Image 1 (cartoon, each protein chain N blue to C red):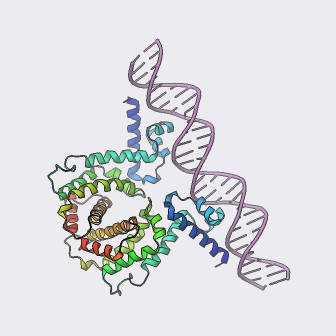
Image 2 (tube, protein in one colour):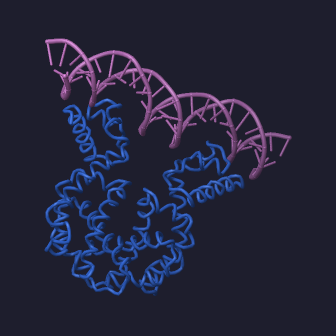
Image 3 (cartoon, each protein chain N blue to C red):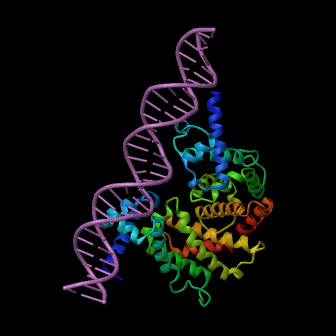
Length: 175
Length: 175
DNA sequence: AATATTATTGAACAAACAGTTCGGTAATAA
DNA sequence: TTATTACCGAACTGTTTGTTCAATAATATT
């Protein structure tokens, strides 16, 4: 990959991340990004089709780090569900700056949508941990949404709480 | 109130509702609304400051119907939490058309934000029903978010399931 | 080192949308 | 009948998105 290309892409990424620290995703315009990245308009569009494509790329980065990591994937893992969930919260902390901007906005759904997919997979693997007399689909939806809420709560509280404690409380509530 | 005013307002409202049946909130422009309502652009803006203000008005309408109704408000009510929740789901059905358009969009948060407020109040009244060893704030957040998820699920499933059953399943999961 | 390729630039452009302004007209109230 | 009020529509400003294109500068190729 051309060095120029790499540098430009990196400049756009980090400009976007910096902007996300202080502003909601929707309020950030392409103009803001290219001003901060100091890159031409046409250059931006030669790298990313739209602003949403840039968001998607950022999200992929984050998720690769969080979910493709050591313990969260999948069948072989010997860790408990609680440990895995705590681990996810830990990893979220590494991306605190980006995530705050991504979750405190109207498109939080976009970001959360990705997380939901991963979580649903994860909970599916642990379905037998729960002995509840409701349809599986209802239960899965409940678990996934509830943990999304924990993530949101965790982010709203500036991630100042212990991931282990949050995970434990969650397990207490859904068991 | 002037009859003209009433008529115009009503035309805008129902145009917006009709558009919401088939399209997401974001994709609907002011132009679409005034075309369908057959009113002038300036007339629209003399009634509503922005498109969001119109959304807010519609939401208020719906919530007045759902929450300000017979049994959901508050201290005096003798009904169980489960009954109240089922009731909310019933009332949602009356606004099925609007709500589908409001929930299947990126600003679902906007709509859900209102619901959350009401639900949090409701659950606060019933906090003693739950004997869980987690902080109240965490529990409230969990209950509220979980029932929001039920609402979303209920809407996604075209509201074809029994509200009573959904409410019962929910109570089973969080008790 | 000379040449070909590729990325970047900046400026201009079209299209879509939000929201405002204003003079004229028609319905309603006094 | 007169005064008020709401509506109209067209034109206008401003913002944002996304495209185009010729010129230029950085890389690759030979």
